[in-house]
Length: 111
Length: 112
Image 1 (cartoon, chains in turn purple, brown):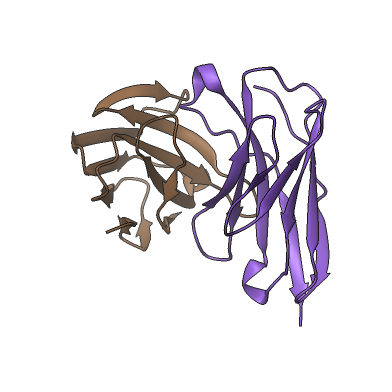
Image 2 (cartoon, one colour; image 1 turned 60 degrees about the horizontal axis):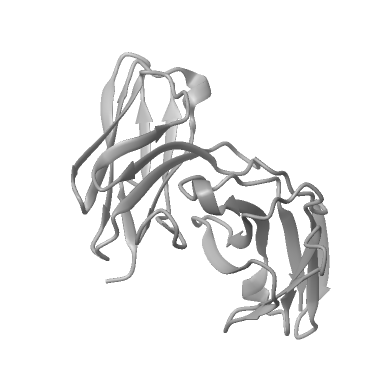
């Protein structure tokens, strides 16, 4: 399974944008880029996913580099509720049963 | 109903006990999963059920025995566990194996 690299932790102030980076230099052509987050004392929750093009949904935006070796999850206005561990995951189109979590980025949001 | 429920929330058991964890979803999802999460670590996949059949076992010791009695229910039977098996056990489901996974809140297991 292709691996991802994320910073261990990041900080943000409330109502500011947050850019969470993820490196995946060994990504293959059939890997989708998924993001999940885990709030304290909860199970993970799906945030967004993409293949080649940038994606937007109600929670976040996903910006994917042209060579697909990196991506950035963008939270447009951080709230205290966004404090969580954010996981960037590569999911093989041919082997979608598996969701292999990396170490993730712990995001702290300050009032 | 758009959630995955897990019972119990907490479980304490001795190494000679037999217990079961239960997971339920009523979203019509056909894929269900068990994950194990140690403190301050990411979740690790244990088992995948697809259309009520076991499709993936990530080399999990036989003291963990999954069961999928029907499309809404997933059990994890525990027997002769070790203290190092203490962890948060997460259940998830998805419409099929290609779609996003919905996670339950987990069962926090302590083995004494």
